[in-house]
Length: 54
Image (cartoon, rainbow, N blue to C red; front, side, top):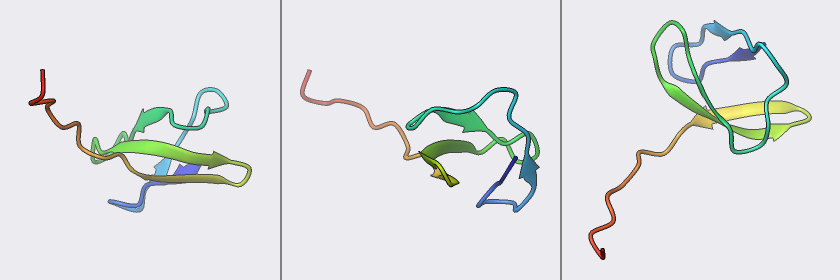
């Protein structure tokens, strides 16, 4: 269980997360990136930017 930094609701995890995994808050639909697993810390995932160099 982890707390969403956007809406502060509890986010239940079905399985142990991995570092850099993206999970979604069920209440506000924010994408959260797992920063560390011990202790479990998440932050809002960065927006995906388009690659204009291609």
